[in-house]
Amino acid sequence: MRVIKAHAYGNDFLFVALADGRTGGSELARALCDRHQGIGADGLILYGLGDRAAAMTLFNADGGAAELSGNGLRCLAAVVAWEQQLPAGTEVRIETDAGVMRVELLAGAGRRYTCRAALGPPEDIRQARIPVGEETVTATVLRMGNPQCVVLGPLPESGRFNRLGPALATHPMFPAGTNVEFAHVETPDRVRILIWERGVGPTASSGTGSCAAAVAAAVHGGAARQVDVAAPGGTQRVEWRGDGVYLTGWAEIVLDGDWLGG
Image (cartoon, rainbow, N blue to C red; front, side):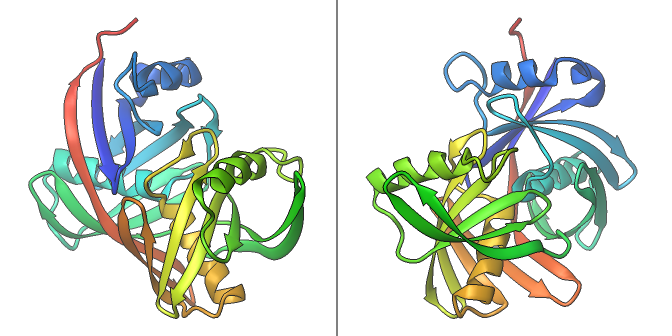
């Protein structure tokens, strides 16, 4: 079975043709994404290609289905561009469980492509006080094609991060789970984040998480609507415009091979 691997700022995904993974996507995700007995990744994307277009179904590393990944979306756009040798300026349309998304190819060199993804408007933005263990945190809760919980303020030290991250991601307030970002507004145009991704755990980067953090920082943290969002894996540009949120950064293909596992 052919497998392509790509990543955006260390947030990595495996790509398998929809026809090869149509059944048992959850089991395949757990096997392929295992970092010791599989290839290793944060998620599996089953995809089908069209002309400057694709469709995707996303599974997190634990086998759970997810609606959308901003970094996964850009990685798939890079796969489409690489397979079809598309030039800069091309728009790739990708069908996801969160709707059809548009990704513009801004530049490409080798197997790395810089893209701007239009992720649509944020939805259901509100603040909530969430009891977690012996403390209560104030979070901005929203949907960025998927559920997001953003805690603004100084970034937590590792012990608190490893305690609050999974507790919030699986909190009863979020029956389907949620992605969690801790976000610190360093300057009006720069936000730094740490990420606990639903079904994965800590990740080096998150596209929708970067967008959610930028929205939360603009609404409740005094940030501008166009910001650089710095995660452990690198910095992406988020623009919250009148018609929605745009995410700009690179994605790189690193493997094209065959999976020999059972």
